[in-house]
Image: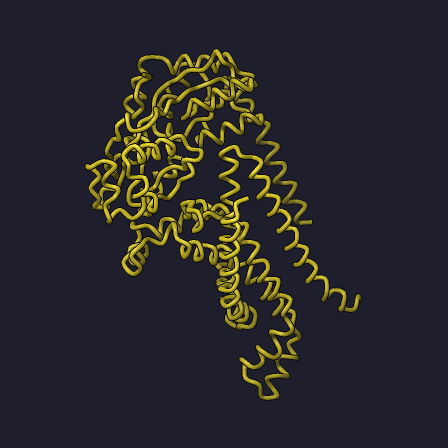
Length: 224
Length: 260
């Protein structure tokens, strides 16, 4: 069992989930409640990783991180090392890749809130922020948790992007999915199987948690 | 309703496609080849001339030799397997997944240091130049399963700089991904195959420095016919074609040393 890869993946997924939580709350709020006509354009961009093959995203990331791109050169000058093959590089890639999985459940939960409740809060003099913290967030907490859990799980399951920009460094960029691939490539099927089984059990648990969470509002809602 | 129409239309399209495809395949004989990715530059020309020569259609998949090995063991429908490491075809023969009589060592791979022209890194000093502080990342193929990766690690150890360079190593999944990590400007220098360095894609963009063959065990490359192939006569024709002097010469030009 590759414990180092497990620990690295857990660290990566936890960090990415927290970053995505911070990004997805305001973003989902804006997407759901903004009256601007072009919110659908932003929504499309956010959802892009759902349909874009990881290899396409990996290719663009590789090109923009390298010394051939201004962005890559700027990062190297600023930090003294290139962004590819580093943990930070992987975090950035994963945040982009997992964004829709964080934003969509939160936005869906926001959209289900009775508008009267938010309006009542505003009428009673609460600021927008206070309404968000006291009304919107508590009423959509299940969506927020679902977003958090899905972000974590999706980052754990990431493969194509990591293969393309990771460089397979133990403890830095060799995640569990890469470790399984390595074992299979080296024809070490027993080790591949061990790690894959752990992932299988983990993924099943995550999905049970997510669908279990989703059941509660149904049970509470009156059936017409 | 609208969805049903769409689904029916898509299914019909695929059905029509699969009906038409075999018609063109029937007139020409077909062959599928699994080839190590170091052949990416050299093989297409060989395939083109062979197709004309034998009135056949050859489909090539490029990838890592180890991947193909596992796939063939599990019944992948390839007729011919060109491996960057002769050990894989030998093991397929031992497990009767490949025909022993067909084994043919077509070349020996050569290793080079490669960097992009504008990287400003001088690799004329050979492997020792990797210890230069300006060389931040060195890309090699994964030594755990890629033949060129194993050879690269052996060469670094032979030169006694493995421990000095170890912290700079990043691993490509196969030799062409390794080259691409350098070509995209993410790694400063790569240890790749000569065949890719002199290929049309990289030749103009970078410079290379050969690593002496004595620095690592030979990277013997071999072809073999898959036992389960139903197109063995054509597969044999293809292997015979590979043995022609002009083809050997062509492979030589593309950085494969002749068989020792």
